[in-house]
Length: 93
Image (cartoon, rainbow, N blue to C red; front, side):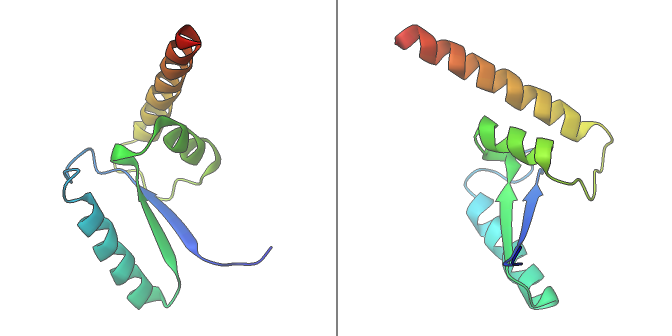
């Protein structure tokens, strides 16, 4: 497997507003790339689609979790959102 970049997902508890999210992500990406010399992709989970959040938290590796259990709660909420979306989609068909 070829190493291309580092993917980092961050949850800020919505401390970064959706209007400031792109600027925040760019600032973190720039800082980490300059520090490490590696390509970095930053993903902000706060406003990400539930399928993306669920997959990241199910298959990714948690490196730092400020409040123990936050990732589990986010994963459960994402799964509930996915089920609700699928149920609503099935009703429209």
